[in-house]
Length: 189
Length: 434
Image 1 (tube, rainbow over the protein chains, first blue to last red):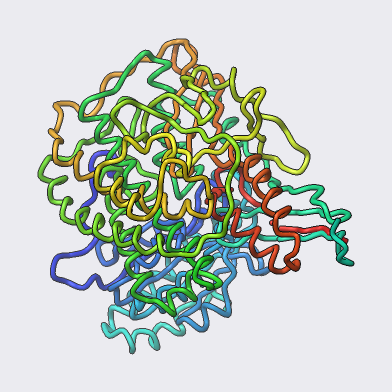
Image 2 (tube, rainbow over the protein chains, first blue to last red; image 1 turned 180 degrees about the horizontal axis):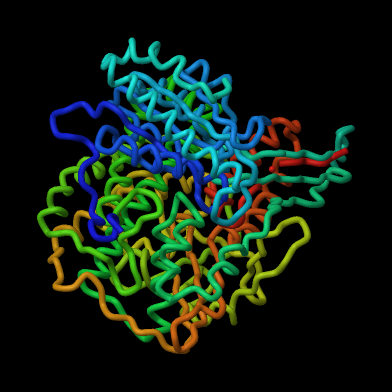
């Protein structure tokens, strides 16, 4: 409704301030569980409010780069298909770990790992990058999450809330990265 | 007769790279002759048509926008045209202008994505955009900057960059002010400069000698380069309105694909998209775009699909130029939309998506519930033409070994910028010459 009443966007960027934290939901809600990234971003936004800029995207690399360029902390939430139990929440930090750990369910030929590699090549990466992945069960056409994935949404949102809160408390990107390393008791790496 | 020991062979590409969506190609060569070329598409494409049945006439712009993350505006605009036609409403003036402006944003972002990240690596000897960006950071940064301005234009008018929410039947939920649009003009002026540099850059690539020998079709509307309206005309004399689509174009099921193959009755495969638009509407380009095309060596008779990258760059330039012209004449109207009341009727609409004409048809009851919906995207219309072109290309290049032939055949497919996500979803290339 907000979007309908105020459809023309305000700038995502606060004037003269570096946007500190961007939460990026990746996915396609019309591919069932592939919509979990958007759902988690919305749930985390309800907890974090104005503390973060929330962007929904389909994961196309140039849009991801636009979303995280010039940010201090970018948290990307996406659907993952790695063979773990559906609903499992994964957390990866830093380029190398993300490149090793994540397989996207995205249907396009360029995915998150490509966006990170491309971002590095053009020197447009966030200062710190965290990826939260939720293991999916089904990505056929249609809307609505499967129940086991839906149950993981609030857990993942709470996890992101912890990551962001700890990062804010430290208020320093490098230290924040270390401080969040144990913030995910329910996650698998 | 080819005397090579491998005159029978099969070449397969299981997952085509740098195309939108996933698909496969399979080529069979027997006794040194190409026997079969298939672009394989597996998944039923008709989910959205079924999903639309029973929905309100106001819903197709929002629902169909989700078919494709790359060209949602095309789906919204074709849906609006078709529903409004069913309801007997014509939208013109500033609302129509704003629709065209929004569509310019989509052309800029979609074409720039293809030119820089998907297609240019083929001509420069890189495996992909990341390798290109590593070697030529400034070039790819330019592409990302240009695309970003397209994204921002879609966001400014559409409400957000993907699945835009500001479009509705009859117009928009909210119109921007003149000041908001004028404030955006400097970015479009920068985009126009970047687009001109892009035309000059891609014009310098080496292009293989190759020609599409068949029919090209595109919309045409007097006084406009076609984006949001027109009649479908072709290089072989077709000239029809959207309500005549079914009488002149048939869709057929083929075993190896769940996307239907389209052909023009009594003639066969045809191609839509930038090459077709350019061939049939060269005279409607803006002076800046026409001059850039001429300097790049393009003429209306251009038929080399590999050179479509130059045509796309010219169309990016045109879209920037046209967007600036629209902003310059824009006056915010009193109402953001015209009233559209449902009636029991059938409506047809089409527009020029970045990849070519996208056709919608809706049948409504008197309350405005959708009884049936049909959507024919450009990639499924182009699929038979791409196969035909691939057949000739492989025939001309059988002297190449399998790896090189596979690589070049993928390049042919990419030159058409197929959006398999639209035609269906998952596409995988096999060449069989046992």
